[in-house]
Image 1 (spheres, each protein chain N blue to C red):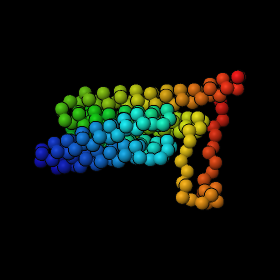
Image 2: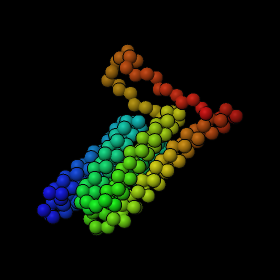
Image 3: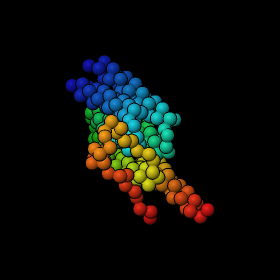
Image 4: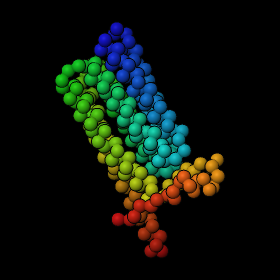
Length: 118
Length: 99
């Protein structure tokens, strides 16, 4: 029974890893790519490590797995935040939907915000 | 039921390696420095998952320690490269304004 649960978690994690990498490869600009890769990477790693904990099923392994997952959950948003900040302050060109008419674009999208120099 | 776990481990290894390869393609292609750093970050997280799979496959708990250290070092690399990218443009702007 534990094998089935662990195997399912591991397969789900692998599928999510591939989906995240596809998003990283196919999305149109840096911020959207970050949106795809950061969250799904965290999810797939968490699922695979949970499967690992189910296979071993002992206290020390579970504590280690919880430490790794907590660490990733804590650091991934900080890293993504710093990357996003650096993207905005460097002025990397961002994607705009060209199918929308100009007036609608102005309605929906704000101008690219800028980070104040510190 | 041992067969199902082995099969799912094979599938997990294949998909994690495939995701690392796809992220590497983005790292080579990436038009800006930030694209490359984001791809590197994703590769680090995928390799942490790979370490978890290897711990199950070879029945060795030490791979989990490797994963913990790798997560820490990957975070430091991302933060350092982000600071570097930000600083570089600020310095370039200052140089241009001096000229």
